[in-house]
Length: 87
Image 1: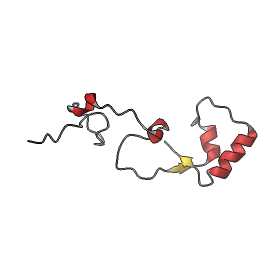
Image 2: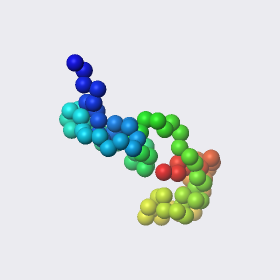
Image 3: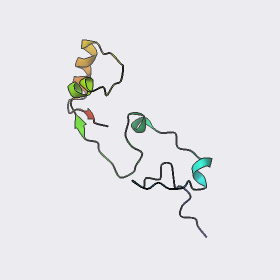
């Protein structure tokens, strides 16, 4: 019989459910990816993030303790014209 709960727990993608780890969860842990490193939650029901302006991201601490030069800030605004993810 197939166990439907082998991936319960970490990275299950079941939002709002605190599940006991399935048999595969501890054997094959999920370490993340660039999106989760940037702060996106590990769920599979989100395909596009909400955007905020680069100026807002610089002001609200999105980049942590990184200090950008004026040239770097200008480049961020050129690359991310529509904004950056708000997570």
